[in-house]
Amino acid sequence: MLADLREDFCDDVLSQFYDQWRLRRGVILRWARAWYLQRGISELPVALRELPPLQSQS
Image 1 (cartoon, rainbow, N blue to C red):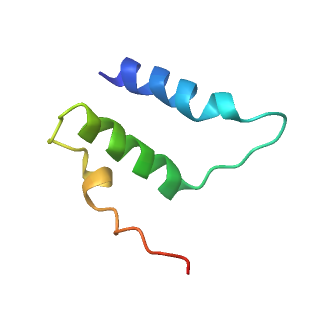
Image 2 (cartoon, rainbow, N blue to C red):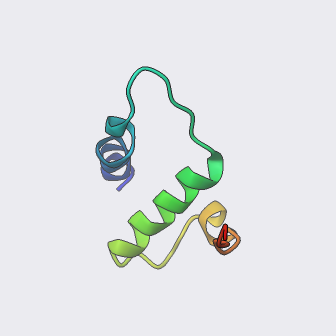
């Protein structure tokens, strides 16, 4: 499962960057939580269960 997670993260996120990039921890954790949930995996790692809800920046 972790190999699939790593491969999909590289395809979905890292392949979009060019020479320089920076990712915040929350961005990575939210992507990972969505990855688990899209696959119907409800038993999330602790770090993914404890994420605060997204807030609108309006």
